[in-house]
Image (cartoon, rainbow, N blue to C red; front, side):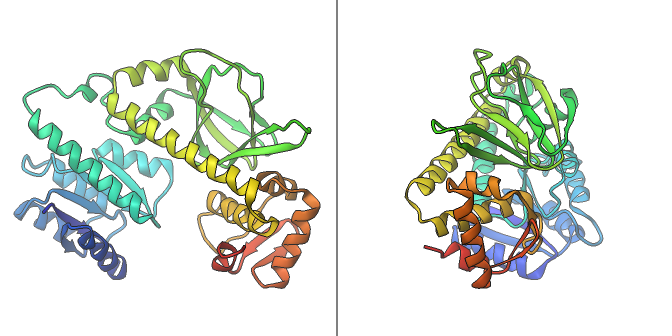
Amino acid sequence: MKRILLIEDDVALRENTAELLELSDYAVDMAPNGRIGITMAKDNPPDIIICDIMMPEVDGYGVLEAMMTEEKTRHIPFVFLSAKTEHKEIRKGMDLGADDYITKPFEEEELLSAIESRLAKAQILARQENQPEPEESANGMRNLHQLKNYFWDEGEELTFKRGEAVYSKGDRSNNLYLILKGVVKTHTMDINGKDLITGLYKADDFLGFTSFDENIPHNETATAVEDAEVVAISKMQVKSVLKNNQEVSLELVNMLTDNLADIKEQLMQMAYSSVRKKTANTILQFVEVMNTKPDAPIRILRSDLATTAGIATESLIRTLSHFKKKGLIEIEGRDIRVLDATGLEMME
């Protein structure tokens, strides 16, 4: 049985996470702060460390640095678990040598998947410890977080006001993008001339993927929903990096596959769901992308909500009024605040 050291100062989160891991057949040691965690890791090295960042006495960065200075702990897979979501914070952790970074609140599958993949990698590397690691051959990349750091270091920083296009349908897809701040939508016209939103992207998301082999035209437009900052980098430059980093390439493929699954689910919703369910799901989708706090309002054009849901704007407005009367949402001008997320999720 693999053993996990969980370092987390929040008692409820620590105990709940430990229970989740134990139900998944892991043995879990718990530490309430970084200082105790360092001692436990050195005295009895675990198979993997899951560590919060903001903690008393010694924070997560201090724990990672302590692990990296000891030969018997420096190769232990290290995953940050934190509410700090700014790219600079993620980058700091990855530059120090962390293997992954999961933001709170997290999905059960996300945490378990990260643990399984890092343990598998550690096992493979242990078998090949006398062979050079292929991921160190080019840019020292091990995961998508470090690819994002590469974008940050090598890319051109661009800013877009709300409503400005990052790229337009028909433009040559010479660049790939990483969003640093703000929200960007991708959209296109259907055969009836209606604008259809095909995706929503937030800070730390990639944008602009087409073929790596050809600079084919973009088949949709990307527009800033709110003021946005992005970094752009040549697609050929990224292709060169990925050719020498197989693990990063695999993570990228998995990410794109998940994105396709989300798009298919959205299309199924648009095709078969009721107007109320489409509207409810779309509101929740925008809340997830645009907010860091569940109770904060979102400011979004009604037309953007309608085109994402695949319904007429008039139908959307009537449905929003119905939701307001039912106490599911609160409307103040253009702002929408969700009062009952569960009620929206259960909408039929």
